[in-house]
Image (tube, one colour):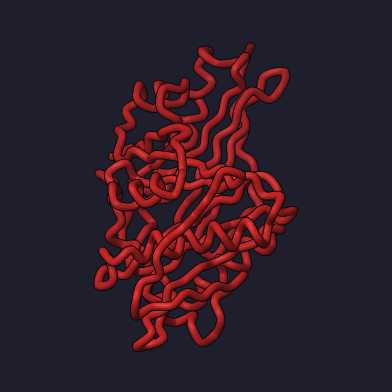
Length: 286
């Protein structure tokens, strides 16, 4: 079967990124490649690849043709690092390794079955919890945005991501994107009682119909407030609140860098169980 690689127009333009798309086809579509280009000034060197070939059409060089097109697209748009995720042990994992990609980070994916959840945690003196749906309230959005910067010291393995810059506008934008696709963004935060400012938070994206599994977006504690049990307290309370607000929800999903031992221990004590591991590959373009 003769294969044609066709570049497509992707209407998914966003303030911080845009995508290029290629379709592989013979007498029918057999695969595709998406390349997300980062337009944030500190991360313009990054491009994220998603490549798929139908199982029945693999081992015919189609993946390599799509990869060549995507890498050329990355180079033409001045990206110097291409990232790609693959579940450990899958065909995609072997494909990327064989084509020069290097594992830069290993991610551990876990799930909490809400039917079996029994969260409990001791409140931490000097702090109080608060929560909201959607964008942060005006009185907290500035300190909340500042806490996001604390994610800059999260384990990233051997990958050079560049500085992650947050401002109030971007915090609002994240909530808008989630709402536009019909989902719910719910946040539990820890406030320092002496200042009233946010010092930790955890986010959860819940399907709009309140069913299936919800996805954690991140849990952050400001460095000066770590080691006091805040992450477990706020995550336990989020689990409890979620079961009340969304009784039909089945589970909560999260992923953590394999080397983030503190967060992995917190999740394990709350009942999260491992489902699979993912290799985050990177390829440096010459």
